[in-house]
Length: 251
Ligand SMILES: C[S@@+](CC[C@H](N)C(=O)[O-])C[C@H]1O[C@@H](n2cnc3c(N)ncnc32)[C@H](O)[C@@H]1O
Image 1 (cartoon, rainbow, N blue to C red):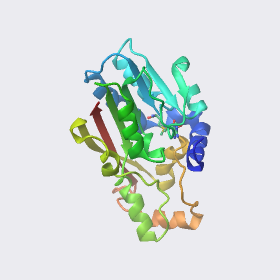
Image 2 (tube, rainbow, N blue to C red):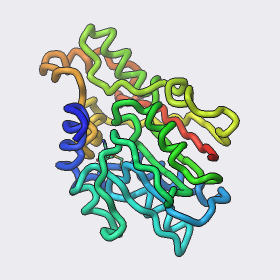
Image 3 (cartoon, rainbow, N blue to C red):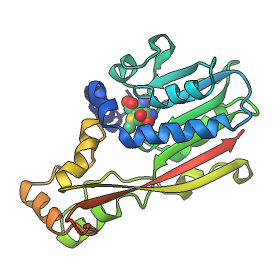
Image 4 (cartoon, helix red, strand yellow):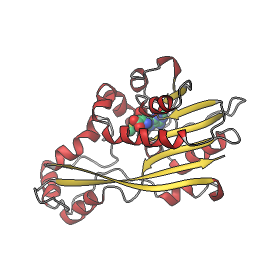
């Protein structure tokens, strides 16, 4: 394992694997959206990879939209890989480590909700781009800076630390990619709501995405955060908005 942060992240996902699919509503929706993009691309035959595949939501969606294709599922968590519908097409690999370039370069690299967990998402994205075979495609989605505006505002107003994960900026992600190869980019907003903030944030804990570099908030700080949470609906529901970056890049 390459570093302490990476180890912590993988441990958390590994323990959550049996409950992942039940709570991963947004990840399931994004998997189908990305699979739709992949279906419309002229992807050459060859190796198709889902990097940071988790339980295989994206790989399964791509395979269902492209009958006869097999998508290899690569992830650092053995328990996540064990949940996959195709256990024989899984590989455990720490994505903080570069791939060794060989003869069998992939023609599709797809990845959803993974890059932001890695140590240097921009450099890794560039590496994935270079790893592709000529004419191959990179299709990725991940949350970016600007995600969770309500959480950040509540923390500022309550003067408590914001324990939300720091997401990369779109600029940092794309800075080292050749701009003319980016065929499609889009930012998508998704809002979730719940009766209170614990219920709003629970799905993240359930899927193992609760790792934070900050120390845990006290009960008193959580209460302060809740009191200052902006953007309540008329029925008092609290909202949380995700900002997701979608990128489609041709090698
Ligand atoms: C939020 S899950 C997303 C899973 C799947 N792509 C989906 O959309 O449902 C993040 C995944 O990234 C994997 N991951 C995080 N850090 C990793 C690393 N350093 N190497 C390999 N996989 C990693 C986790 O094990 C987890 O399965």
